Image 1 (tube, rainbow, N blue to C red):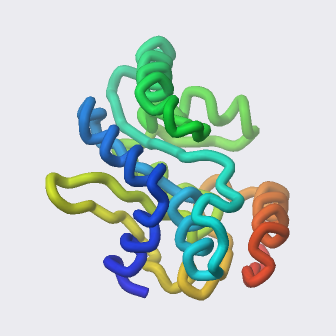
Image 2: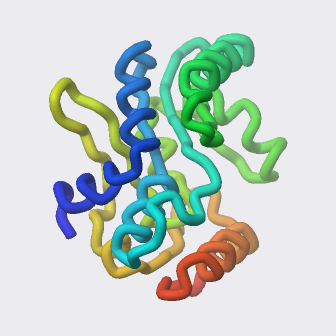
Length: 188
C-alpha cells in the first residue's frame, strides 16, 4: 500500500474527513488527525466491515507553545462544540504540554516535544504512527514506518520511548477481538 492508497481508505470515513476539514478552519498550529481512527478505518475498508467499526475515538494532535491547561481546554471545548454533530468522541491534545502530565498519569518519563509529529513518533505501536492533515487542496501524510503493516493488518510494538508491555498487550487484545485477521507481533 502506498500513501495515496492509504489516504483513500482513511478518507472513506466521513468523520475523518470532517475533522481534518475542521482542523484547517481554526488553523490550530501543527494540527493532525492521528493514530487509530485512520488505521482502523483502513482495516475496516480492507476487511469489509462498517467503516467506523471498533473506532473508540478520534485523536487530534496540535502544537501550541501556550502550555496552560486553560488554553488546551479552550481548544478541546471549541472542537467539541464545532464537531458535536458527528456524534464521535474527539480527543484533542496539545503536544507542547504532554510532558507536564504524562509522567504522573503513566509513570513513565516524557521529554518536552518540539512538534506534533514528535508525539506521533512516541505511539505504542508502529502501525499507528500516522497522521493526516489538510494542505490546501490535498493532504499531508506523516507515516515514518510506511503503510505495509496497515495493509497487512499487522500490529507491531514501537520499541521507542514510553513502551509498556502491559499497555501493548491490552491494546492489541482489544484490536484482535475486533479484527480477528490481525497479526500481533509480540513485544520483546
